[in-house]
Image (cartoon, rainbow, N blue to C red):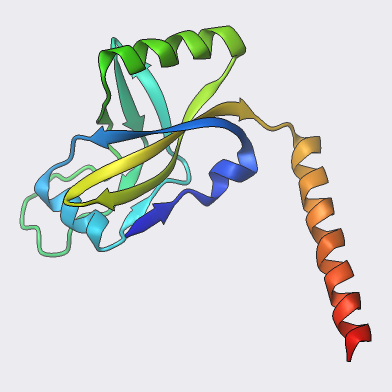
Length: 147
């Protein structure tokens, strides 16, 4: 089971990625295993000395009877202290940001793949789209002449 953030590669240049654990409730784990997680507007932020996944929308589990569930609450990411400090120093040096790339299961655990990178400018996004369109058109022409 892997839930991918499709906007991440469109909006950011990914320089490095790493794996982190996440603190969840039981019903959130069941909901993620059913594939009910949205990372499109989520980001990762330092709060104090810890990393938090903010604005990740994990839908309420259908068979959960509890009230007052907040689907987009902040969730703590689990990393070693040494990794957190190296990330903090990398972010200060190169004006980089942290963002979630995917959520997946590893054995019985839920893991988050977090990317470290810089944001793309609008002209960079447009040039990538233009290159993709040119490649698609060339493939279409090539298929047309092969038959």
